[in-house]
Image (cartoon, rainbow, N blue to C red; front, top):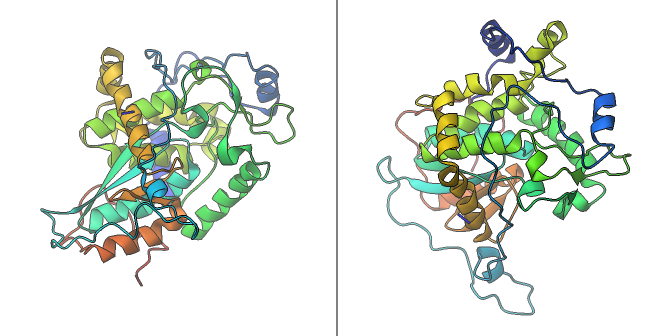
Length: 358
């Protein structure tokens, strides 16, 4: 199958001043009562959101099959059976320069809070070092199979402690890292998160998902334009930073200013060389070309033997999660990573927890 951490106050002034006229049709905003009603049946429909454009249906796909030649499989070591391969990939001997940089892939989900929490470090790495950070958008695990149907999310999300822990940990991580963070409303995926609900963790079927395929297809279009890192630097910040959120003072005066889907177009247009309307028209006319991007990326991810995000990969070796960033950078320095003579866009402020000592 085929960030710029900005001052929230300054951004809010620019953002809300430029919002302009509201859509004629207003979205039904989320409340506990509405969510109870929507999740009372797994066959219910999400309210129409005028911010979301009509797009062609998603292709029917499934998770890639496990690859026996994947890095983690071939390097598996339990001290009983010998691994098929031993040691790390051969270290680079060529001098790393601006003309001959290190190439890394980062598999990325628009629904992943931990992807957002590592974004500032990835953007700083790409901007200040001789390395190309290639963002590879994939669908979140909850909807990675688009075959249809509904059910509980698998993997770690099947563990009773994982979701409450992630909800608490991501906010704590944001404060520790100095990264603006607030869990988005609406969630990019329609899934029943309320722990005491009888259908806790059930995901509504792909054909009824209101947001995730829209923003993932835009991410894939951005990748095909060579703008994926710039795109996540803008749109992931919009979704996860809390700058547009129902809890903001601006939203208390006008609920539309707390609804992040209303601002996707504006934030896409902030990416140099991207035009939202042009992107949507292209997706409508060429859905198979755009969808092949996340299909191919899912297969590329499978070749590492891993399925989680964010997944940073160099020479097929996967580094899973933002808490592996220091190890990832350590490996790149083993391979001769060098600094650029001057930063390049997209720009960001230096991360609070940047590992200078490595």
